[in-house]
Image 1 (cartoon, rainbow, N blue to C red):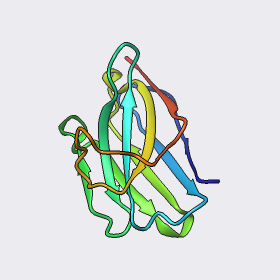
Image 2 (spheres, helix red, strand yellow; image 1 turned 135 degrees about the horizontal axis):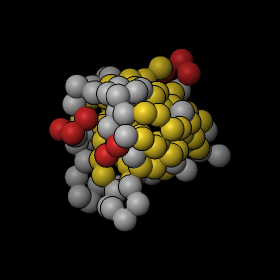
Image 3 (cartoon, rainbow, N blue to C red; image 1 turned 180 degrees about the horizontal axis):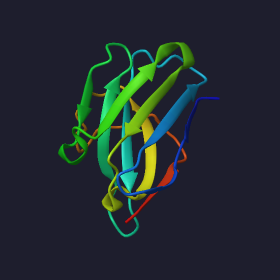
Image 4 (cartoon, one colour; image 1 turned 180 degrees about the vertical axis):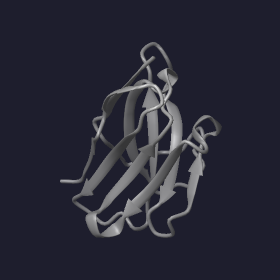
Length: 124
């Protein structure tokens, strides 16, 4: 069974840090890109960051550049999202998803697998 499982969410004060993990199992993801998304209550899902599992190339949305870092550990089949200098507007459920498409999310890009999400809450 192919699974993506997120973990690492929680409650943190503004300015704090969290590290999210996306653990992959059930197949080889070397040909995939892993994207992180987030969705706040009442808002549309928003792309956050992406990494190519094979090359390690990364891409970020402007609002998180310089604060978030995406990385992967091939030996652990895990992608990380290090989030620093967190702001209340970062509060959302964070999801990871696997795609054979590119790093830059396109409107009609398909995702083969999704995780269940992990809640991040940043208090002011």
